Amino acid sequence: MAMFNTAIESQKGTFKVRLSQPFTEEMRNKTVLVTMSGRNKVIDRYRSRINVSAVDKNSSVLNLTLTDAIKIKAEDILNELVKQYNIDAIKDKNIVSEKTKDFIEDRLQSIGANLGVIQDNVKNYKIKFGITGLSEEGILALEVGFCKQSKNSTT
Image (cartoon, rainbow, N blue to C red):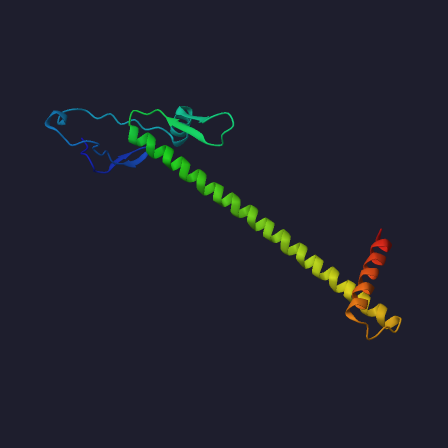
């Protein structure tokens, strides 16, 4: 005979039976039946009793309900589901943010490399044709012209 709050060994493992309400004299000679189920069976039973519905047709807000004999247990399960959903949503957003950041960094690096090549080409053009001492306007016009020439030669 086992006592409450003491370890009980079984083929399924070790467990304890705890009182969910104060012990009364009426309980002294009563038999406690403990039923053990596999993890997946328990998950499937809860999954079949959870109802998810939209608040209204165009809403992104959901109603979650779980029917259980113990109200506080049902609330705890639903609270844990919402908590895990929020954790997963944050992880997903972080993954998207990281991929976006990596993409932007790659593009900036590529653009920087392209600008370096264009500046080298402008410098070589100036050297080839002996262009020196141009005003800022002249340099800008030359660079714009060279960029147009480069685009035309790549298409």
